[in-house]
Image (cartoon, rainbow, N blue to C red; front, top):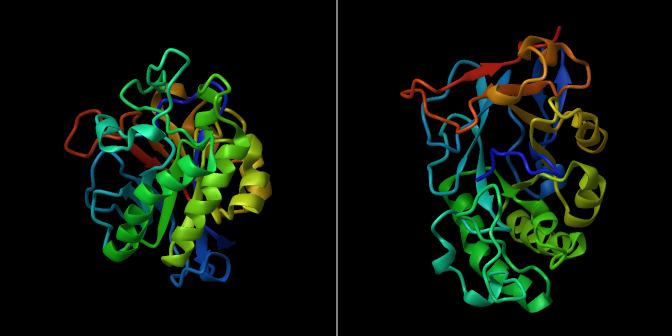
Length: 279
């Protein structure tokens, strides 16, 4: 799960839509992704990786972990950590796909030390990763999700050059093919500087971004995905007021403010605020 921002890149969120007036209007994701569910009319979205809860007013899109149920009344995006293990789950992966260093020690994400990088460096290892992740993707579709986001596309930046962008693009393409075949739209997450390559070569349909406004990277996503960008800003790293960020023409139309740990509303630390519709 991402929330801490990597040094080099940011994370991301979205799907293809058109804007009309003050609210987002639906466009047919199926035209691009092979998925049959159109993007809904909505004024905002929510990011619920910390646990599912009832949707607030105007929320028409929601991202939840693959182990959580989709929201019955919203366009639901299934979160999948496809390039690193989830915390505590390294033992459930084939040892051959866990990245090790020259001493044979597992390579961990420095910001998420419970997550081990997956070894995407060879065709055989990429195929073995797909063999694990593909059933998750089909399960997301069977459960009723309409889209999927793949986290940690930028794992190669934390690998001491053991992995490459090309390795991760190859795996992303394979996973996107599985997701599209299952009827899911596919979202890029992380790696703003490679958005054009990822869309063209890996077949992504939208972007899920974290802190693109704080780090002035939103145009990199919007240049590639247009208005198909969902952005999450966090309370602990706001360079200016959230209202000012919402009013910035470079910011995505669908942008929200969340607490860093993505608490549920029963926590005193829970924060959720959405940008008002632009008139």
